[in-house]
Length: 384
Image: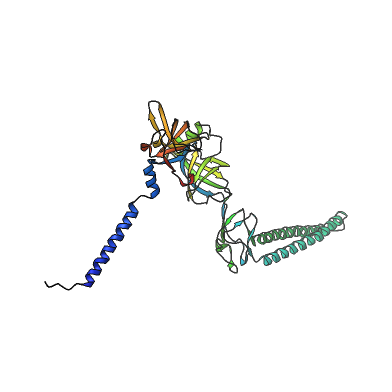
């Protein structure tokens, strides 16, 4: 019988295909086969459960609102005199203190003008002294009949002119001092300064506009609105004369506890929205509250309270009442009778029956029973 010629390329292709299939099979097997630890657990008959290590938490009643962070003070610095900007003394974006010199505008020129006006004032005062003596002399001579009334009137007119010259020189000197003071632009209060809009060496005048802005960052004010019902709840729970206690959620999700140092409500409820505006002032030493941002706020509407909280799904019920299943230090399931309180969303307050450190089973309840050994894993990594 005549045999056909074998195609070496075809054979190599089939071998390559078989190798790929075998590799894929081993990959899928490794992905689908449970780890040896899990197999050992299954072989031992101890089921896996997820537990939550409970502890007392803040369960104070609250009202949720959205607040707008505002600066108590903000200012746009503008020049009050004209001249070349000699010096910009601050670092942009830094914290400045009240009274710090921020900009200097030709201070030497305005100092020289003030000195000139002071010299003019001194000269006017000296002239007034001389003319006053002359007037007194003419007045004495007139009383002795040695000087005419016309001479006395002329001396009196000179006296009035000299007095007016002193007042004019005094006003010019005070204006020069004001301009000299404005040659240095200072921070009116402590806060954070922004970008310098005009740099050193440029000519500025009152028409130049804003040089920089300063915003007070500590304390800050949070403005929010509450419904008439929320306000009534707070007032009826005896919170009328207390400061605002709030759990504030920052834009990055961090929760901070803060208590206001000053607050007030608007004087009437907005009939269009049935809400009233509330203004609360908070210390912001860590500068966590940024003016202009929005934050979620949980405002206490009752007395502060701590309690243990568990998921509602972990609570069982029988003819004897409510219970939860816990895992002790020997990894054995224990049933504990509990007294439940208010619901907090999907969670439940436990009034009695649990203590800090108890490990409550929250998943895998259908696989366990009182007295059974389990393999427990905490539901949150930080509780491991």
